[in-house]
Image 1 (cartoon, rainbow, N blue to C red):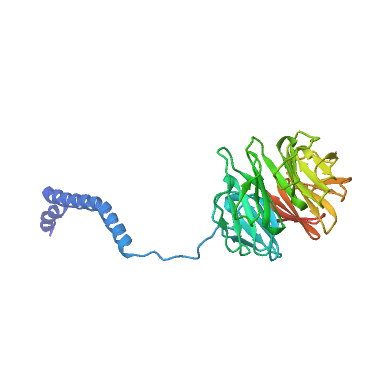
Image 2: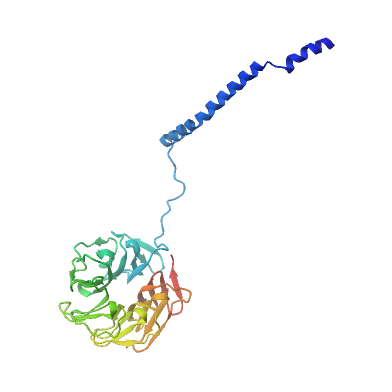
Length: 355
């Protein structure tokens, strides 16, 4: 038994060395082949997936909000049915109804719109950068870009538009632009030669009278629809930004550095009133229902005045909100303020719509 054990043991403890080398070579070649094949397997898999597998949608399409945080709105008007229309960044015209619901109206431009005005339930227009003029004939369902609007070779931003009965409207802007239409915006004519001044706002009064305000405190008055002009003496040299009238004689103009000017003779003479603020003022409106003047400006500023423009007050719609507002629209017991944000103010509470 001892001999059998001693003979058999070496055969299992010392395998031949040439057999191990052959096995290792085979395994190495197989490994190299597998590794080199991986990229081609991945490419083939992706190609097959791209040709034969159709991606399936997961969830609904994400649409951007109607009003985004980056948006600014510069113009506001009472909508034909209810609520308001606001116009601003990217060619947006947005309808905000009485409940606060927001709907974007389709427009044919991406140019920023600076102002909007409404004649009646069907006819309205908007103006803006690069001289764009849009009109609607069906209450805002469709908007058309008007061609052939007089242009400057230098600058063409239209900053304000005001409407009057009979399809009349006046638009003001850069390089002395004072444009008039008498057919609901279909055709336009320039009332004055081009000059290096921005006319910031205008008022259309009965009998064809026009009052215009602009840079450097400049004022213009025409009694014949823009055929001839007079330039009244201005008591300020800072830019005037907005003007409005409560009747054919009594008007107010506002501007930078808290300027408030009052006229009682249809714009021929103006006197400065103390508004109680030095913040820039951008707009003024006559609130017929509440028999008061109401204005808007920088840093959330509002101003209010009595009908004769003798007594004025100023404040902020909300001490926590220092946004600028380029337009104010009285609406019953409240007023809309439009600019860096949009909100309603009732004299006590500031209710912002949301970005």
